[in-house]
Image 1 (tube, rainbow, N blue to C red):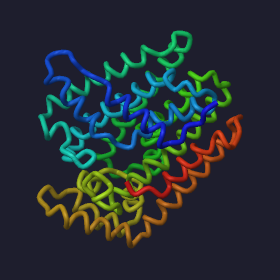
Image 2: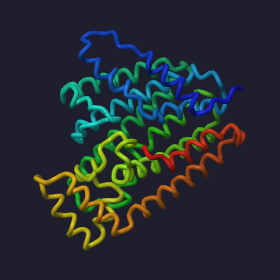
Image 3: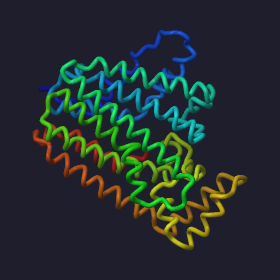
Image 4: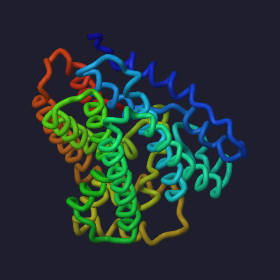
Length: 324
C-alpha cells in the first residue's frame, strides 16, 4: 500500500479543489464561492480525511468526495463568520462581504452548504448513511458553536469551561469528523474510527487555542488576518476570559469594552499589555501542549503500525509550532 506524505496529499487536494467548476447561472452567485476556494488556506480538514483513509487504503479517489464536502463546508462557515465578525480580510485578501457585499456573503454561503452536500452524495452508497449522519451532526454542532461565540460577546461571566466547549463545537468537531469519516470510508473498526475522532477533537482544541494566541502574538505577514482582530471585536477568547477573572485587569478591560470610538492600535496595545502582565501567553501555550499530548495518546490507540501513523504524528507536532 502506498503511503502518501502530507505535501503529496495537499497537492492532490489543491488539484481537486481547483477542478471544481460552477457553471450554473447567475454567475454572480457562484463567483464568490470560486473566489474563497481559490484563496487556498491550510486545507487541514480535508487533508485529515485523506490521511485517516490512507492509514488503511491508498485509493484516495474513494474518499475525495468527503474531502471536498468538508472543505466547501468549512469555507461556507468562513463567509458567514467574516460577515458576523465584520472581519475585513481572509487569508490576506478582502473578505467576500468586502469584495462584494453582505447579501452576497449570505447567499453564496448558503449555496456552499448545498454544494457540500452534493459532494457528500458522491460517497460510496454502502457507507453514505453513517457518513451523512455524522456530517449533519457535525454541521449542527458547528452552528451551535458559532451561536455560543456570538452570545459570549455580550457576556462578562463566560467561564473557561464554557469557552472550551464553544471551540470544541465551532472548530474541533469538524477535524474529528474529517478523520472519522476518512476511516469509515476505508472500513476501519469502530474503535479506530472513534480514536481518530478523539485525536481530531484534542488537536482541534489545540488548533483553535493556537489560532487565538496568534491573533494577538502572531506575525501579520504570515498569519493572513489582521493581528488583534479578536481584541477589537471583544471576543471572549481563552486569553480574554482569564484576564477578566483578575480583579485589577477586569477594571482595566471594562472601559475598552464600552468604548465605541477608539484608535484600534491603542486598544490592541492596551489589552495585549494586560495579557503580558498576567503571563497569559505562557498559560495558553501550556494548555495547548496538554491537548496536544491528549491527541497523541488517542492516536496511539489506533491499531495500525507506527510508521503508517507517522504523518499524523508529524501533523500534530507541526500544529504546535505553526506561525500562521
